[in-house]
Image (cartoon, rainbow over all chains, first blue to last red; front, side):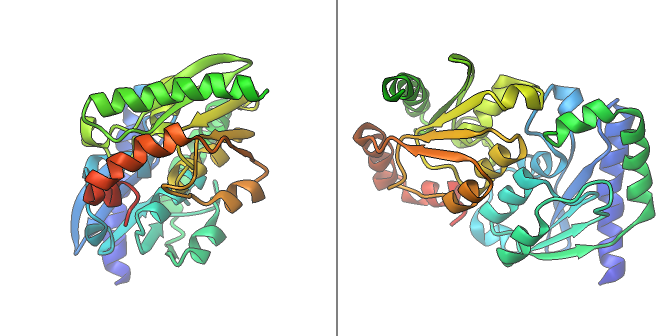
Length: 149
Length: 149
């Protein structure tokens, strides 16, 4: 299962890298149902002037309209611990498992997710930490905007 | 202040009515900063095949990229008690006041908002209850999809 998680996290990281190459914030996400990727996305604050398209939100949007019976079989992968907005979306749709790349550059309301019976798995990957960490170091004002600081 | 709130709630309700006339779910929202409407939106699940454009999210998106110093002077008006996703967005951006039209057709995590120091004001309006209530009565499956049931 560890390798499976890593395989999908690499896809989330590809999304983060795509965002970076487009001049955006390098956070990516994929939504997986029964081992198939059914949605993928990345932060689009810069690319689309968006205040709501965090990686997980863009991923859920790109997955399209789903039923609750679909979401219950899903795992959402994200390169970073989900913020309050993304955590709320995960709770709204009762997505049962979140796999994150890291929670050192930012930590969302993980206790709230856990209290809402969402399983959290932190892969604690240096690759995710470095990708975003380097970006934050050079774009602190933009980063603050993205996390509402 | 009551009349002021009602004035802006009427604008949120216009958004809900616009959604209905476009064949969508009748929930609307406006974002107000220092007595000016700086964003407005409505639920676009049907119109755009969207899983994330609840009224408040569409409203925040249409307000564009803002700084935390902007959000702290804002009040968000919504015709319905905000769901977990929208509540999370409100908490992410530290919007200090939520004015809702009603919370009978649906009630979001209001305690979570209050615990996060967001002030909640419920205008408890029959006009908002009726507009959405009639829609739900005739579209229960769609409504369940919108609230993740």
